[in-house]
Length: 104
Image (cartoon, rainbow, N blue to C red; front, side, top):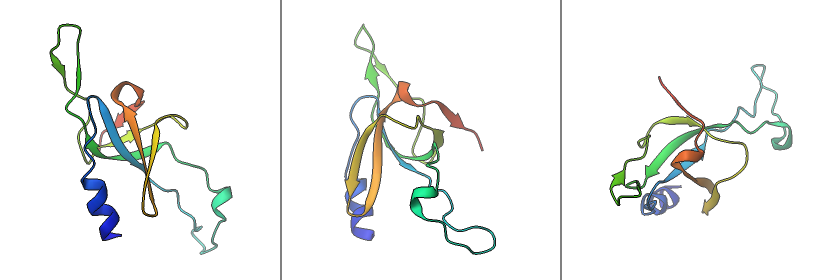
């Protein structure tokens, strides 16, 4: 896992792209019963791992992205570009594709 974490930190999103990792739903009930992966609903919540420097507006000025690494966000159930590093799965979204930022 340390190798995949090191590799993922070497990825730098370009422009207004944001690298996220879905927060996994519990695969075990409160009473200790393990649920099959196929029955666990994919959550639309993710943790931001890296962000690009931002896109450019029509005048060529940089427009910063709306989130920063460490933020929790809501993402659409489909879309984005899947990235797999080792056994871990990540997704790249454009800033405007994120649905909401979760304020803690």
